Amino acid sequence: MKDAISFILNNETITLSDFAPTETLLDYLRLRKRLTGTKEGCAEGDCGACTVLIGRLLEGSLRYESVNACIRFLGSLHGTHIVTVEHLARKDGTLHPVQQAMVDYHGSQCGFCTPGFVMSLYGLWLSSDKPSRAEIEKALQGNLCRCTGYEPIVKAAESVTAARPSTLFDPIESERSTIMSRLWGIQQNDTITVTKDGHRTIIPGNLTDLANAYAAEPKATIVAGSTDVGLWVTKQMRELKTVIFINHLSELQSISVADGRISIGAAVTYAQAFNTLADHIPAFGRLIDRLGGQQVRNMGTIGGNIANGSPIGDTPPPLIALGATLTLRSTSGSRTIPLETFFIEYGKQDRLPGEFVEKIEVPLPATDTHFAIYKISKRRDEDISALCAAYHLALGEDGTVSDIRIAFGGMAGTPKRATALEEALKGKAWTQSTIDAARDTIDADFQPLTDWRATAQYRQLTAKNLLTRFFLETSGTPQEIRRFALEEV
Image (cartoon, rainbow, N blue to C red; front, side, top):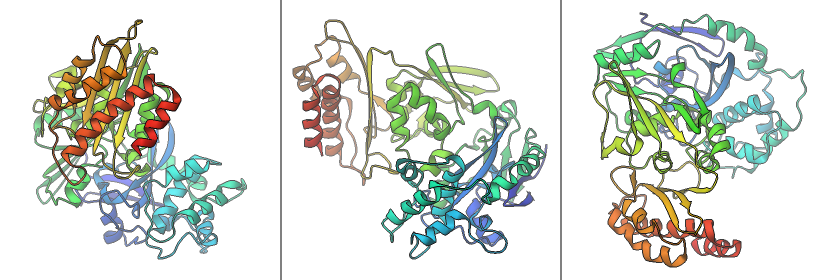
C-alpha cells in the first residue's frame, strides 16, 4: 500500500501526499503551482474556462482528453499527464499554431475564456487531422464566450487544421514516447491511501481492492467522473470524509458487444461509449452528443449517471426502455437486477452496504422494432433535461402493438416506466385514434413537480406531445412528420 499519488504536470513529475480528497485540479494549478492560465469561471463544468488536457494510458497508447479542472479531483489523476496552456508555446515564446490562429482571426476579446478554448482546440488538433466544421463545433460545446460570437474562434480552428506540415513543432507529439515511458514507470496497480486532516483518499489497485475498501467503509463516496460529485463540493460545499476513486480501474472500463447485448463497465465514459452505442443504437449516440460538453463527456460515466440515482439523469430512461440490466458487486459476490428496479424512490436505490455498480448490459433493439429518445432542455447543448423520454416499440404483422416500453426522466422522483400508458397501447392498432385515446393515460403514471427547469403542466403536456411525435415518426408520411415538427417549434 502506498500513501502518495504521482503524475506528470506539463514536463514535471510530481509525487503528492498532502491533499484532501476534494481538492480540485484547478485549485492545485492556480494556488499551489501558480499556473494561472487555467481560469475559474463557473466552477461546475459548464463554461470551459478551466479546460486542460489529461493524457492517460489506454490499451497501450497515450490518449489525451479535454477535461474541466474545476470539478476534477486530484485523487483521480494518479498515473496521468496533465497539460496546461502554459505548455503549448516554445521556450522562446513562439506561440503554438492553435494559439497563433486565435490571434490571427481575432478569436479573443476580453481573453478570460481564451485559454480554455485553446486547450479544447488543442485536444481536437491531437485527435483529428482535418476536422469538419461540425466536429469543431462539437469540440467547443463545453466552452462559453460572451464576447466573440464564436465565429472567429471557429474560423481560427478551421485555418489551423486546414494544412499543417509534418515538421511543425508540437510539445506533446515531440514528447509522446518519453511521456509514455515515464507514465509506465508510475506503479498503477497498488492501492493508495492518502490521509489529511482526518479525510481519506483511497485509490484501489484493482476491483478486489475496491470491494474490500468499500466493505470497510460503506459510507465512503465512490467517484468515477466527478461531473456530479464535483458540484457537491464546489456548489453545495459538502464535506466528504472518505472518497474512493475508480476512474483508473481497467476492469471497469471495458465495453463489448456479444450475443445481442452491449456490456458497459461502470467507469466507461460517455466519450468511450459513443462509437459503440452510436453504431448499434443510433438514437443513443445522438443523446450522448447532447450530454454536457466534450469535457463532461470525457469525464462522466454511464455507471455514475445510474449510481447517483438522479431523477433527471439522461441515460436511465433509454436503458430502461431497452430492458437493460445492472450488475452490482461487493465482497459477497455479484448480483444482476433489471435496471428499472434499481430506482426505489428519490434518493434511494437497491444497493446494499458495500455494493457498487460493476457493469450495465443493454439488449440490442431488434431490427424490426422502433426506438427513439427525446431530450427536452432549455438549451439544446450542454444543459440538464427538463424531461427525457425513451420509446421502444414492436408492432405485429397486423399493425397492432405487440410490445412497448416507455420510460421517462424528470417526471417523477426516479426514472420511471409509463406502465399505465404501455397497457393502454398494447394490443391496439398503431393509429392516430389509439394515440389520441391513450395520451391522457400519462396522468395516471406521473404527477411531476414544478421547478426552475419546467412547470408540472409543461412536463405533462410535453410528455403527451412526445407520444404523438413518436407515433408520427414511426408511422406518418414525411409531410406529416414535417408538419408536426414545425408546429412543435
